[in-house]
Image (cartoon, rainbow, N blue to C red):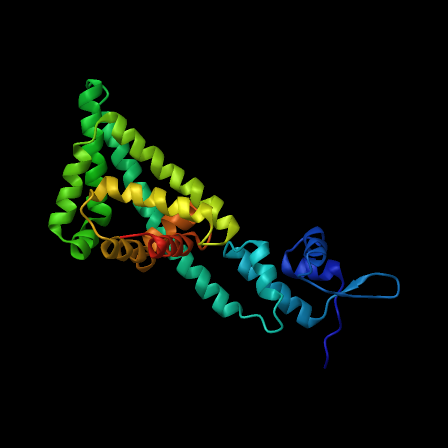
Length: 259
């Protein structure tokens, strides 16, 4: 026996979704209930299944804009969309764990340097920063680049003056701003993307020194896509797809650069 369509009040009571939200979903095109001659909404079983899918995706934290894109297809691939969202959440989880660890380490460092001189406190903070990096990325970095490279990088960081350190930190934040700007244009060959690539190259040079080659640099940047933590770092800072855009911008710039 075919189920009769239900009114907005009946659907609201059955689903726990308020009538106001149901009307809002209709305004956004997510639901398309039929109307009676008097203008009352009627929801079919298919409408209610669609609502259940929307509620499931909302409960997972997917924004309405993403749900609109998914449900706008003739045959929505909800399973695939949730798998992709799960991968993103796992990458964010790793990034958040690393951020929590760094914050805890910084808190301990701050507590330990309260009575130190400014110079001693700065040296302590540098040591704590390198320790945090080693604990978070050290094993993978040493396996990929070798102990000599990482040890030399650590020595270079410890040798930075306060002004040099502050300049490095400022450049890192400026890269995120430039990445958002370049990503908005969505053209890895644009001048904004080229400036992004130049800024990133300067930042790497601070850490690696002047002795690395183009192939080594490209290998390092492409490695961002192989590590969910790096992908999450740039995507969280500048938006979805930011890491892939950064890699492409560097590839385009290096391809056109002399050397």
